[in-house]
Length: 189
Image (cartoon, rainbow, N blue to C red; front, top):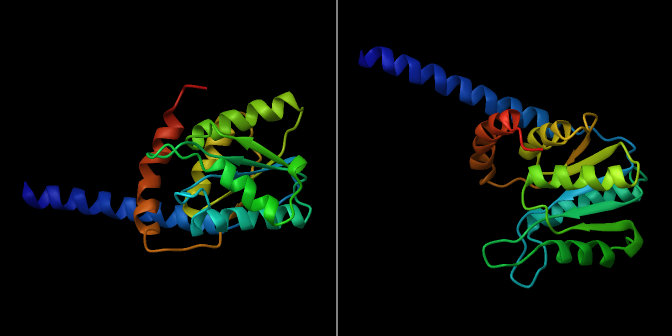
């Protein structure tokens, strides 16, 4: 009985490891393309509102996409952290300081999570009759981003990953496996 349980756990562990590997391989493969709008998903900001290194890396990739002409505008999307800080104003400021005109930055301060960012982006795009989106986030997060945007009616999502890797990514990648399953099963649009 114990031997059988151990075999089952070994198989489940192997499947989980394969899923994590696929997430990493998929996320590290950028899918750039010319889009109507770029979306930079929020992350952690410092207490003074300045972006953390991970968030700055996301913003730098969005900035690069804007400078390269892949997108004419950028949505900065985020929500409130535990201390009540919303990272969106700091994201805007970061882009403004690097030459992005104010008219090219759209704020989504209600993008508390990936699902809400996809929902809010789709609503904004519908209001402006746009169809193509480029999403910027961490590599491990991009498969779930594509799924969330597809579930909200935007299946052809271009993606670019932030050039920022840290040890915490191991945990974050593992967390993406159940998160992908949850998003695949969600029905609240």
